[in-house]
Image (tube, rainbow, N blue to C red):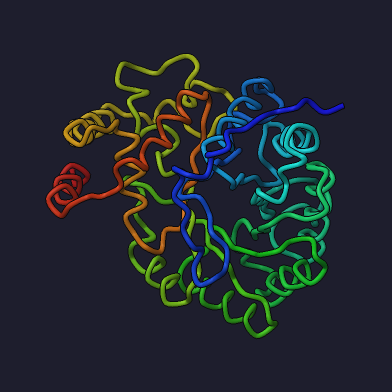
Amino acid sequence: MADKITFGKHRYDKMIYRRCGRSGLQLPAISLGLWHNFGGVDDFQTAKKIIFKAFDLGITHFDLANNYGPPPGSAEINFGKILSKELKSYRDELIISTKAGYFMWDGPYGEWGSKKYLVASLEQSLKRMKLDYVDIFYHHRPDPQTPLEETMGTLDLIVRQGKALYVGISNYDAEKTREAYSVLKNLGTTLLIHQPKYNMLNRWVELDLLSTLWDLGVGCISFSPLAQGILTDRYFNGIPKDSRAAKKHGFLKKEEVTDKLVSMVKELAKIAERRGQTVSQLALAWNLRYKVMTSVLIGASSVKQLVENVGTLNNLELDENELEQINNVLKG
């Protein structure tokens, strides 16, 4: 018998929802990514509390990938346990996404963008999450060897099979995005969304990707908007033992948290304070300033951290003077 979980009746009232490109789908301005803190090495009860609180705050979108963990696949397994029990009756209120593209199993069919890999990977993901379909299925990274027609043709096939309602791409540059969009359009499937890495310290999408997405009517959802925690006050007094940089299995290394970066973030924190925000809230508001930016994907290691980040929505407006101040700090 599944536990009975009660969520607030007004959970959708304060969340901001943005239309994804020119589609009929709306996503919360802040979505929850399960890249870190939800795997087999993490505390399951904490993960559950974060997911419950996120939904109670109006976050309807939960983003995963086949390799999220560690170990790979374990984030989907954990999410599947929660979904099949406490959240089962809320399935139609949720947008669940997963991806395939990075290494998952040995041999020539365990990564990249072949039809063999993508179909097999999604089948595995659906089993791990105990789902009949996902709402969004992404190709996680471009494959330089597999013809784009094969990769996009597989995304089209998956939609036609009913195993994903929408499809997206991640980590594609502007040129490849246009090509992918065109191939899918000719097949009769719309490219819904692009998921690039974007934050104050990594602004590559501003060159031509964001304008390309706007022109095509494709939504955008950025990952690592807080640069894996660097754009917070987490490292103002050294590297905490429970921080992402301190974890052996994390992607953020201690040597990446330089004194120069920390000093820069402290300057950003002064701008945030004048706005009545934390530096992480400022970084998220800055990320959401573009109309094409449908949502930002945040991670969370605690309910407190989640609530703070969602609080960003209380003050999203950035004037020209503030943007200039931010740019001056980022120039170093």
